Image 1: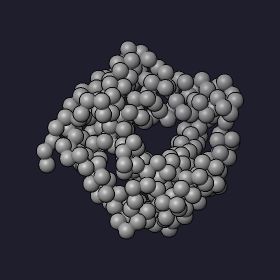
Image 2: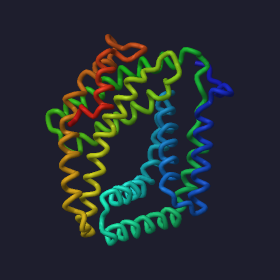
Image 3: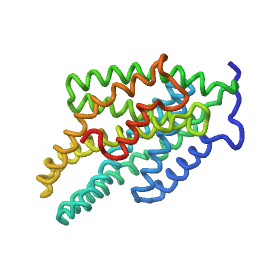
Length: 280
């Protein structure tokens, strides 16, 4: 297959790389805003998804590790915002903010931002296949593989909906969602599928976050622990209920039911997800 650089004007990878590099430069210079870190991680995930889409699995793994190195700080940022929404005691907020400053200092000390920058420049932008139909061909293959992998993870989570299995399911859903977002604006797009994947990711992500908050709150003795445990139980109940709604999703990604637009069932699931009726 002949490869050539992406065509000007349709090169989201270059735009996303620019966003990543600017965010890294800002963070290296002392920017401590949560939105900067969040923007960095989101665009790294998008670049990772594109690498997966074009078959650059090794480079996608490198970018995924870059995202992982920033995960603890992101969790602390989200925890701080969550505690503020609870109107938590000031002592709790002080403890979390102290940990945020310590994590930021460690990232600077270990030169993590510069390391990520080097890896992005070397590994984040592959050539685009010259065949104009490459997106359709690749999505057909990926959707079959993703549908099978998703079905297996769903079955495991249905049989035993423990945190580890739900977390693995969440990671797969997140990966599929970012891949599908690359098809938006193309003939192969499935916006209803993307919307539902976002909902499923949100339900499972909230449970994972609450579990992390609960563990940290217990470890450092936050006064907000009872409220955190209550929210954790609610999030766990929703997450454990979700796999039963996912079987149809996996089936629509298989070869027999694959379509260029979402099926009626997926549209119904997307609407239910937006209305908060799933995983309740």
